[in-house]
Image 1 (cartoon, rainbow, N blue to C red):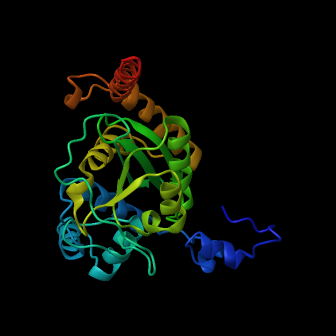
Image 2: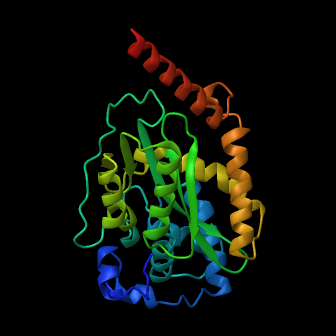
Length: 283
């Protein structure tokens, strides 16, 4: 999103507008050791089972599995992975300094139609020799994944790209719900929502269950796709995720919909809504 050749705005000014540091624009990741990648894979698998594990509990778990690790290393790796225990919140899930947070709007709200509420979240994707991050935007009522993007950093731009695609294809929702991570409190993200007339909702700190439907998506994705492969490149990972997302949206039976896939339910409900609206206009 930063344009080095822009003659009107300096790189520093562009970074400030996008709520990212100038140093992060120039940063080149060094990569993790083989051992750290193994630890991150095990942390990710355990976190799906016990999302309430903080640094201390995860360290104990890994020691019980035979790894001689200390809390300092596990804290750094969990922060790098963007993991957010229910009762503790690492730095990567906190709003950046100066970023505005918003109240949680979904408590006691009945979500009964497509595009009433969307949710977005980020997860860690292990590969054979590295890792990536995945963001997905989901329709809360039908569970359909509307857009997704993969990135090798936790900057906000890949989240905004997914949001732009979702709005362009499906129109804006009434409410967007996320956690309080710096990507979702950034100016680039919140300004795009405000300009589209979307009400912004954010989970309470450490409230894993506030975005439970996306968390369930991550669990299904990882057990049915990610953990079954050892992707070598970002292109392989992207192709694998794309194939599974197509399966999830169009073919995978969903319990909440009586066995119907999310995309089928989304378009049926939208068609019903449009038919009702036309009938009301005629009346």
